[in-house]
Length: 205
Length: 137
Image (tube, rainbow over all chains, first blue to last red):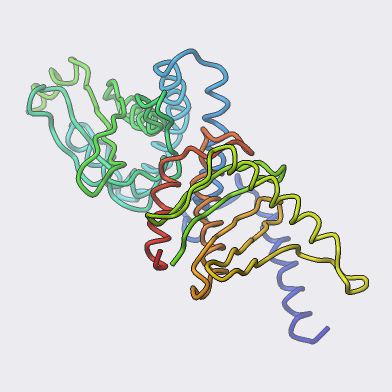
């Protein structure tokens, strides 16, 4: 074995040791660079989650609810972490503020990019929509025809719902497929705010 | 020019078959299955016999004819990818490997796919067609 290759073997051995020594709970929460999860690993994990959920539900709505629940558990934790990572953080008290926070900061934490649009419904006062042209969660998922109503981004809707809940904006969040020219996988996260929030907004004006 | 793609499971079942050019001669659905099974058997034989002593054989890799060439790529898990192409088409190895990439992305990562079963995945279809177009189907 040559000198160089022996050195590389030794350095990789120390790498493994140093990774092992710093467990995930001991890691610095602020350090995010280089610690992203591979999309393949995530895709396989999500695939297993979906198969697990599918065995335990009756019907598409039930499955979406379960995915939403999974997401909710992620969302509650994600809100705390993201707010903590934002150094000059302040508490979002207005609807637009928190929605913008989800649209930019949360999306960047999750997917490394901003969401593609944030819109207010023209028909309903209490509805907002966040859209993603190419959602990462369902990147590799082809939904069979008999389940065509299903949108796997119900998981993402759950995350958003938990964030809104945690920030004192209780609402109902659902995911819908709305394909557009050039973006066949485009998904819209529909947010229906509770009445009390609208009343609170009135007071804050 | 690439004529068609076959994917054969490790048990010899046909998982996927697609033609990329109009005007090719077709077999019946049953004959495609027989073809896959027969090829699987022949491949098994060719990987067992080798005139070279103490060598392991990869099995059949290329089958050459006047009007076409058949390339076979077997993955470590035993799934076989077959491409039938025009004899002049170069660099099929690369196409086979990229097909394997697309397969592992859009078939294996799809929660609605049962391993070893026929592939019915919209995204796989779309991406295979895109790949073949790119390399000059």
